[in-house]
Length: 284
Image (tube, rainbow, N blue to C red; front, side, top):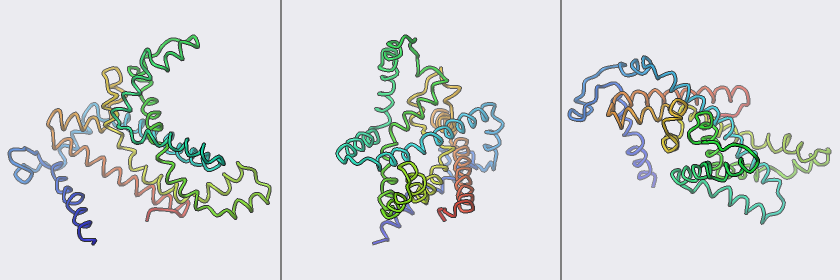
């Protein structure tokens, strides 16, 4: 029974790794991968010599770090709040509403975001009602990261709570009973009982999320893209897309993508090592 599953993994996950060598060749479709000339680390050097390289790296790090800082704790907070709700019908309604955005495609979600933040959208209507001036959110560089992160939380916070709610269901009731006997209130129970109990789950998911520090949601950024926000929104993913798909620089874009993947792997290894040293919890 395991042979088909193993064959699928090898064919679709490991065999494509053969294409990594494109990053070290001057790939020409007419000659194929094997027939193209080796160029070594030429394209890696070209990237760091590019005048835009550090701007792209900076934008990627800022966007990913801000997203991690605000998006990662959001499902934990929502799960803790839902765990305290005693009214089951209300709890189910909140869960359903928070899960729904996950099933909306990114294209539709960005379309909704553009409508909400349009000059005649609900947000600007509210600003005008309070006496303020309308803001062109989608064309203001200073608002790009906020909109990117807020839309990410909106779309993913509900789905992210599923794992944490499952972890919370495994917390022994006796621990809460002992805390109540000791005079702990709700906040003290959450801090001293609930959070330590789900810490292994939090650590594992945090390590897995760290690998995405250098990988922003390229599809969403491309949908939010325009000339006004280019300086802020241009990240490694959009740069690779532009160089590889639009300019047909296949080897160069493969080199940049490979570099990003290797650095992401190193981040995961480092995070796992630090976590194991500090908390004794790790992936391996």
